[in-house]
Image 1 (tube, one colour):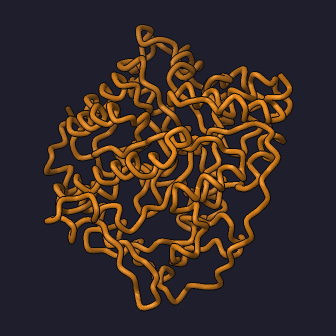
Image 2: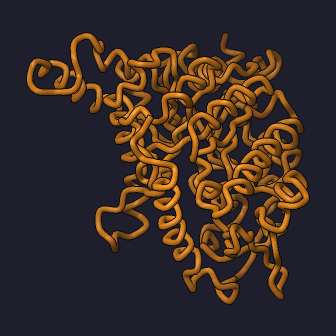
Amino acid sequence: MSETSGSETGSIMQRRRGNEHAVAHDPTFSSTTRGAVTLLPTPEKSPLWCPVISVDDHALEPYDTFTRRVPAAMRDEAPHVVEDEEGVPYWVIDGVREPVIVTNGSVGRPKEEWTHAPAKYDEFRDGVHSATARLLDMDIDGTWASLCFPSLVFGFAGKVFAWMGDHDVALASLTAWNDWMIEEWCAAAPDRYIPCQLAWLLDPEIAAAHIRRNAARGFKAVSFSENPEGLGLPSIHTGYWDPFLAACEETGTVINLHVGSSGNVNRPSSDSPREAVIALFPVNGMFAAVDWLFAKIPVRFPDIRICLSEAGASWVPMITERLGRAYRQIGSPMNWTRADGDPTEILRRNFRYASLEDPSAFRLLDVVGEDNVMVEADYPHPDSVWPDTQELIRGELNQLPNTAIRKLCYANAAALYRHPLPPADLIAKSTIGSAG
């Protein structure tokens, strides 16, 4: 276990919680900044080139996600929604109002409206917040199945719950989110949704117990922080997280490390523009893969599977080369030993990559591993290319053998998350399926 005590962890989280909430109160989030709202017509269904299992999408939580599930005595303290005088919703989390901004569901709106302004739920496509309506948008885009992370309001790894002042309410709220995900969102179409839970970050033993319980309920994955130290928690190098990691390995629960789940994305300068941050998104995944590898997590837990969500894979060949160089230097004063194994082989064995617009990686599958890459749609965020995912994957993958295309589009995801393949008749109707 880490030397960081529970009280120390709590105080660190409390300080970081204050900083995060200060950002949320930026005046640009005021309802006065709300502009035009244009919902574009529903597009025609795309020609099906190859069915997709998207391993990185997001869901916007309904108003009663928590109040309907926590004990009655906790309802006033659990996350809940209030509306301002214009009917604009705000989540109240630990007494602080958090806006539901447009970028929670920018698909189906003109790019000039992709702002950080607060939005009403009826200003999004229904598929942003409705699991049944989402199926219609998935069908338009040729997406057979989807793994959904939380909305931007609740982050990607449960940090919002860890930052709440009352830990009992926080744990009940996190449990409520997980219950909603599997009992309502995924239950709307179990063959179309892959259940992914959030981890309790303040106690690895409790987190481990939840992983085992949730695995029995059908959860196949957990969203965790790419760098817990960035959230004020013990580092992955400390051994503090081993009970949680052991439970993930034991149950086959895939650990999804979404870009930004450390509470930070790479910004070279304090005033670097948004374009620079977007261009550097994959750097988070590169950092996480190398850090988790040299923390020896896949050495201690050889059957664990780690997916770098929204990080792409074009950087993997470069990292593979650098890992080979590091391995050749064993014998100098380093932490890694021959007994730990070849890090390039461990990288290929334990790590998986979620790719969106990543053509360089697809040209280097001999290095990355064609069994290790999966596509994603990132619906409904600005990065999503909905409704043009079929056109995108055709343009980037059509030079590959059909067997490799099937792996990247759906077979690798089905194998990793133990989820059913697309129906045989759907595959047969696709261009790739009909090609034999």
